[in-house]
Length: 292
Image (cartoon, rainbow, N blue to C red):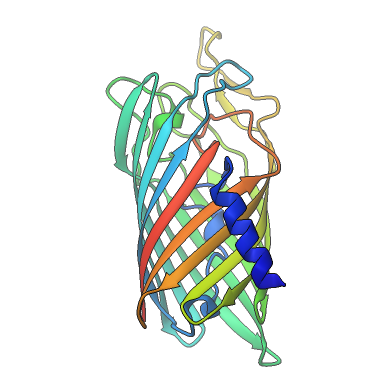
């Protein structure tokens, strides 16, 4: 029954519009991979491409969107000691919209996780790490933050995931420090609290996964006022939007170590603001991974 449900979800995801709101190289790294997904392989190095589209509708405050995003992401998930793992991720981003084009290296993310076995079949894993402001936030033509490959802040990330056989439940928190130095918005993002719950199933050559991901932004974002004569920051009403997404993934194992993956997500709620450049009405990801 679960196998059929996962395949139905995947088909639905591929054939419908998709919203995906999760901070790039952010809190969503927590609990994204489970060991059994790799058929007992402990390590993974992957290269992926993400295509996203913001949608044509402007924000509630009138900011234009109609932005296409592309991200090439290199990721490594390595066990450095028994039940102790390191995950590192770096994206290279492209954006194009009515105001111009931009590209560059994005924000680097690094997390360390430690797992503990409970009654042999259960696993409790704790995560701690950060997202680092390695991506640029300004361009020569003064594009706003939503066109930038970086978010402009150093963020602390922490959380935990409980896995029982093929099911998992996770909680995480992301704390940004400071404000982006982007000339146009000077964006200060609110903290993110997230919950994820899902299941995966591994067949001989194919694995499937489905989950619900909920992201709660604790505070409203604030930006530079465009009407005040001096440098003044204003909180944006409604910018602390709750996000609920249904995510699905399918992977094909071409050999003992090589796999290909397809990932997508469907929203239950959509975003009305795009100050951070993370709003999507369409997101599709393809990935190739070496598992060892």
